[in-house]
Length: 88
Length: 200
Picture (tube, rainbow over the protein chains, first blue to last red):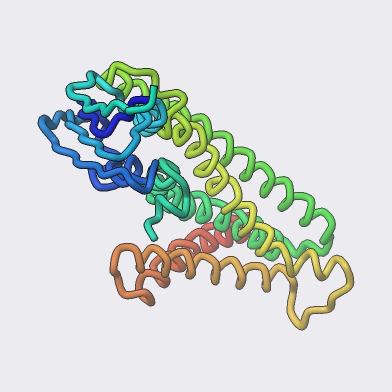
């Protein structure tokens, strides 16, 4: 079964939680997740961020659920890196 | 170990959102606590100067006032804070173009009014019961060296002093002056009640 090892998301989030807490909450989903977050635009109530998550086997649904729980929304999946397994 | 690890993913955010309401709760604590204490002080002064000896009547009157202050404080804060939180949530939803009811923001907008309403309701109730305690104890046979109404007045003035000290700590004012300032307000109010008594 193919495993997702990198995913880049375009996310619109409120100012709270701040970038550190937002990224930390995502990284806590799995011990091997590495999260990088870049703010690309700041408005009065929101900010657009690019979230890069790297890991051995990234699960997409828990990530989007947590993002929505924190009051943010995934605008688009900008990049995905998936590695196929050799077993059929 | 991060707070988010202890509280679980996203719960730290809920705590943080609720924590943001602390200033509002603090304001309500002082405002309605002051309101409750002055109401009780007014009642006690009135009972004292009128020479009331019927402790049961005084307890019922003060309990009635305390319960009314609790209900009024709780319901008014709950209704106004719910309206404020809903408006804030709606504005954020419009900015994000998503439904936030199930998010931490939605949860906070439901819990925060309850939290603030509890502070607004319980602060006058707790202070009123504290002020009422010497009369309640006297009614149940405890003998005081002074009139229980006079003791209640002293407790009320002490509570008002503490509320002033609390405000002084927030504003960075000298605690004694901050406490005396609120006591001065309470004494002025008691003096007005005494004036009414003289005028009878």
